[in-house]
Amino acid sequence: MADAAVKEKSVDANSAEAERELTDGFHLIIDALKLNGITTIYDVPGIPVSDFLRMAQAEGVRVISFRHEQNAGNAAAIAGFLTKKPGVCVTVSAPGFLNGLTALANATTNCFPMILISGSSEREIVDLQQGDYEEMDQLAIAKPLCKAAFRVLHAADIGIGVARAIRAAVSGRPGGVYLDLPAKLFGQVMDAEKGKKSLVKVIDAAPAQLPSQESIRRAIDVLKSAKRPLIILGKGAAYAQADDAIRNFVEKSGAPFLPMSMAKGLLPDTHPQCAGAARSTVLRDSDVVMLIGARLNWLLSHGKGKTWGEAPKKFIQIDIEPKEMDSNVEIAAPVVGDIGSCVSALLKEMGGNWPAPPAEWIKAVSSKREENIAKMAPRLMNNSVPMDFHGALGALRAVIKERPDAILVNEGANTLDLARGVIDMYQPRKRLDVGTWGVMGIGMGYAVGAAVETGKPVLAVEGDSAFGFSGMEVETICRYNLPVCVVVFNNNGIYRGTDVNPTGGSDVAPMVFVKDARYDKLMEAFGGFGVHVTTPDELKRAVNAAMDSGKPTLINAAIDPKAGSESGRIGNLNPQSALKKK
Ligand code: ADP
Ligand code: TPW
Ligand code: MG
Image 1 (cartoon, rainbow, N blue to C red):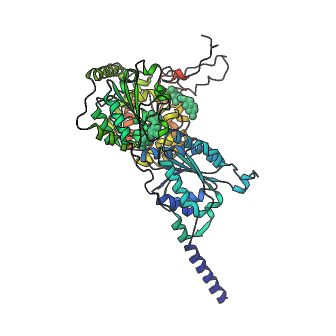
Image 2 (image 1 turned 30 degrees about the vertical axis):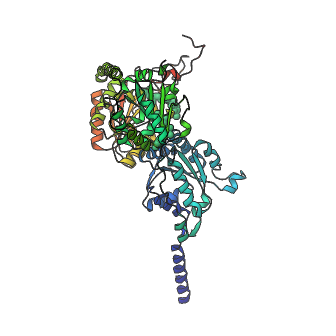
Image 3 (image 1 turned 180 degrees about the vertical axis):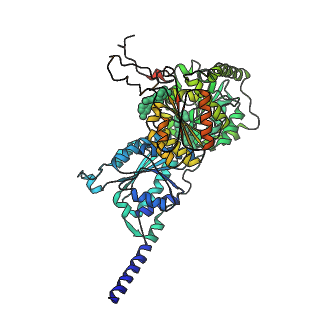
């Protein structure tokens, strides 16, 4: 007996000894992420990633679990935009992967760096299509929808796989990367020392990309020739975190600037050169347009047509992606490089004294701006009940003015388009919205990601339809006790709440929701604060109280169901039937 006990004990000791010298896929993935400064994971757990997430938390990684992978993916994507490091989203196989894929594709479209890591089923079974648990050839499906896609089959390749994913996400034009990790990989064991050596710390993941001196001189020549210059700042400029250089450049140029939605606040919207309130005028009448991290896509009417007026225009474009040049119209002065390097080189080339643009142009722009601002002012101060969008937004505009470091998340149609115009931003990277696709559903994912990454208060201004796409994540907001205040602009439907079923049948019209729904109760269900408001004054008080408390809050703001217009400001994109009865 005694002999047997001794023997058993020594076997234990040996295996403990052996364990210390071994590592496995689980730990190698965690170590590879941590080695590269990735300390937060956004996820939905399940086979085969549950234990991975438990171990990651045990190893000090912040693990934020969501109710749906699309929202976890959106949180990772916005983390990438805010930090210039890839946000990481972890999902289960097939259905979880597909739910996360929408967010990965959206991140890629918006040029945000993120990595979607999905567990996958057994390769041998998937490839023979023998019907494994959640069987799907995920790598093949992800490939066309993201910037790069990789699969790791051996524990010894985890280090290099994670390194490739990180570099692919953040270098050049940032985007989404898919990393496929088959279930078997997690449990694969290898020698700990060898494992440690196999990890790769990515050096200079997004190297500076210097523009050629010739391109800088050409750009300066074109800018100097301008009689009516305009600078357009896009979300690439916000992403670049070259805030001082951009501000110095814009101010030195003296040109009016127009911020795209997520570039608002790079220079304050109240800056004397800001042409946000004279958008149509500057797009139509400018003669030289400099794009900094903005694409000439649908959001800028592709750089041509009525919006851009009759007079010939010359474009200067700064972008890290060479293929972006001439994508829609001829670019007279392409400047290829990272925005920080390009703008610094331009500043240098401008020299000591740069001629101010013709006074006539500056005056034309500023008088148009003042005129439009004056026209808008009384609408924003209206206290009518039921509230219209302008009255409600006037209240929120005042809140952000007093709290310029709060992050504003915004989606919807009227709720989006009107808020973008009305709510002035004062600091860079504080406005997060539907981006290049105009996608609904980013709201709660972006709100959680922004709160987790920055620790700043978040105000999410949501159409009632928009909110519904990610609304269940109010539980996530409560669970992690995040400083998020959600305001639902509740107009009983999509665009409006007044459509009727033309057949007189009992189904409501396709764009209409339950009348006078109480979204505030949803937040209360999970221990957060719910408030129902009907006037701009009540709304302002409720938002201020929520932001002072830092507690999860949802304010249901009753908006006149008649107030909105079809598709907000982009009704012109709606196809029309030639047969439509007037
Ligand atoms: P917006 O929607 O605000 O107009 P877009 O998403 O259309 O902006 O354009 C952003 C552009 O910025 C993309 O073409 C992208 O390649 C570019 N970009 C992103 N990061 C950088 C960077 N660091 N340096 C230069 N260009 C960048
Ligand atoms: C993933 C189409 C664009 S805007 C919108 C939808 C459904 C909702 C507008 O209603 P909301 O706003 O939010 O109540 P408001 O203030 O005008 O009443 N699916 C996806 N993305 C988009 N863009 C749509 C559908 C859409
Ligand atoms: Mg609505």
